[in-house]
Amino acid sequence: GAVVSQHPSWVICKSGTSVKIECRSLDFQATTMFWYRQFPKQSLMLMATSNEGSKATYEQGVEKDKFLINHASLTLSTLTVTSAHPEDSSFYICSARPGNDYGYTFGSGTRLTVV
Amino acid sequence: DAKTTQPPSMDCAEGRAANLPCNHSTISGNEYVYWYRQIHSQGPQYIIHGLKNNETNEMASLIITEDRKSSTLILPHATLRDTAVYYCIVTQAGANNLFFGTGTRLTVIP
Image (cartoon, rainbow over all chains, first blue to last red; front, side, top):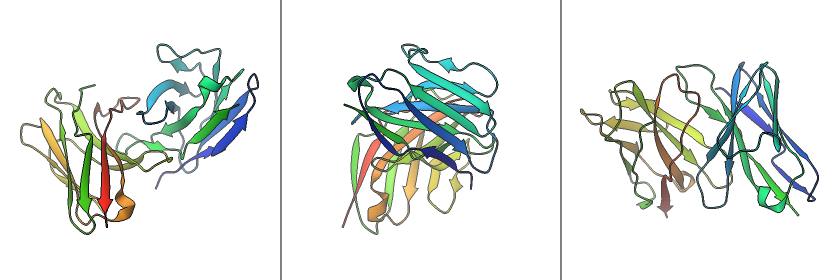
């Protein structure tokens, strides 16, 4: 089946530094990928939609200059958390869809801890 | 996207069938019912989806009422590894993203 690989699975960084998270579709091409954030004991919240070759679309309340998204190829999207702060600590998850007849496939998530 | 209502939590004995209900009374004609689950600290896992007819795959069965206002996900023989939060989502086939509600936390008890 379709696989979305996310890396790293966890990262600890210092306040003020930037962290990059990668999301790859391993056996299909994805013109669109999605980035979610999940705080403890809460549900997933869509942050942004990553579009190959064009700008990402951000959900209301998500700062585009803080959460930089790059979707340079049909199999790779990256999310960079810039100038991270402790309140950015969360579980970040990406997803993509192999085709209209398939469900969305999710990465395994990245747990970011900012200290 | 139409909203869904699920019980916040359920228990199920290991080996028994787990029946997880979902209400989606405002679903529109072109919206599908999707089920995902999320095991602790992992990304959501696709289980099954359907439009009108009941569906079955190797993981579960999906029963959708005739009026499509509710559905039930059935795990025929629950195991401890099925302990997870189960999300029922209704969305159009071409929709670009999924709206996750609060889901049902299923605990399978030995």
